[in-house]
Length: 241
Ligand SMILES: O=C[C@H](O)COP(=O)(O)O
Image 1 (cartoon, rainbow, N blue to C red):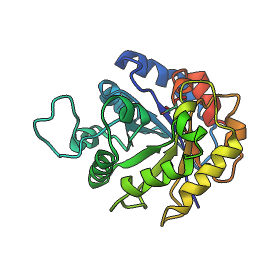
Image 2 (cartoon, rainbow, N blue to C red):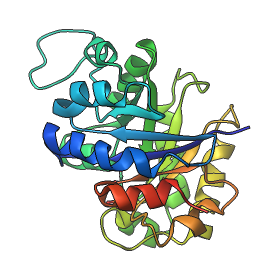
Image 3 (cartoon, protein in one colour):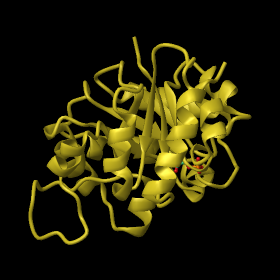
Image 4 (spheres, rainbow, N blue to C red):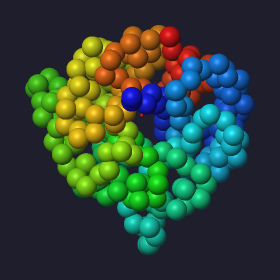
C-alpha cells in the first residue's frame, strides 16, 4: 500500500518566529486529520531547529529544501546531511525546478544529493517536471523519463518520494488538469522498479482543487508552495475529502 504524503514547501518564506507562529495555529487544525496521511513541512534552514522542537511529539514531520552531496568540506553556503539529521530532519526536497533553473542544479548533482540524503537516513523528495515549451512540443514524457533515468541511478527506491511538478503550473494558478497529472504520474510509475514509491503532484495546489487532485488513483499526495504558507489553507489541503 502506498503512503499519502502532503508536504508544504515554504521556499524562501518565513522567519523562525513566523514559522513557530504558523505551527501554533496549524496544530489544532489537523488534530482530526485522517489516519495514514503524512504531513511534512519543508522550511528554510533557519527555522529547522525551532521547528524540530515545536513539532516534537506531533504528527508533523520536518523537511529541508536542500542537502550537499559531501559530508563536509569547503562548500560555502551549502548544508551537510548530518547537520540536518542532528536537528531531526526527516525529508529533504531535491531537484526542485527553481534550483535547476536558478542555481545550476543538474541531473548529475541531483543524483549525488539523493544519495547523500539516503546515506544520512532521510527520505528525499525528488522533483521532476517539464517546461511549458517542452509540453507544447509534446516532449513531456521524454523529458520526465530522461530526468528519472539520470536522477535515479543507484538510488534505493524503498526510501524515496517523487513529486511531479510541471514547471508551467508552479506559482501560476495554472494547475495541471488532475486527469493529466494522473496520466503523467502513471508514466513515472512505469519507470520505477518499486511500484509503492509515493508520487506527489505539485503546481498551484489550492484548497479548491485538492479534492479533485487526491481523487486520482495514481496521485499519492501533493507538494504545495504558496498555499502551504497560511495555516488555514494548508490545513484545508491536508484535510481533503
Ligand atoms: O514545491 C512546490 C511547488 O513549487 C509548487 O508551488 P505552488 O504551489 O506555489 O505552485
